[in-house]
Length: 219
Image (cartoon, rainbow, N blue to C red):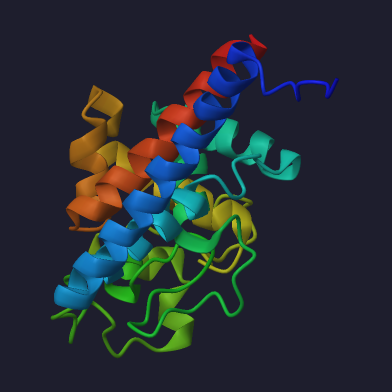
């Protein structure tokens, strides 16, 4: 007598079906995206951009410890959350890891100040985006900055207010954010003043909330 071959049990069949469902869904989704992309390439670009943005946000969410005392001292001085300074620092120069610390538009230093914002918009020739034509000696002169209503600060008392000095840069950012509404709790308004972009506000707020969560967990 020939032995009957045993088939797969019902449980095994169900298990295999369950495993195959996600594969089928992924395959269908990818096919739909590719087909849509053929008809609308801009949608693929947008999806890729969103993915990159998501990945970028999750890079470097650990605040370098050497900056913490500076953030906290500046925040205490100007009555704002220190985590807001950390968020701006992360967005502006990835915690000062960008090289050079000079943008194509002319923003300078660790916290990316336009010269006219740092020295003062009433300085002769300050207009447009604020790059201006300011001599180097005036850019870092506290007396000149005071005269023209700038936000630059000599935080370490060395006689110059330098956007390329980490302490001066962070204290200057704290000064600016404080006067832009952060000291009154208007965080979004202050961020928007720093850079007039809704996307910028969204990005800074994301890191601000992330750092606030970390701060509360550590307390």
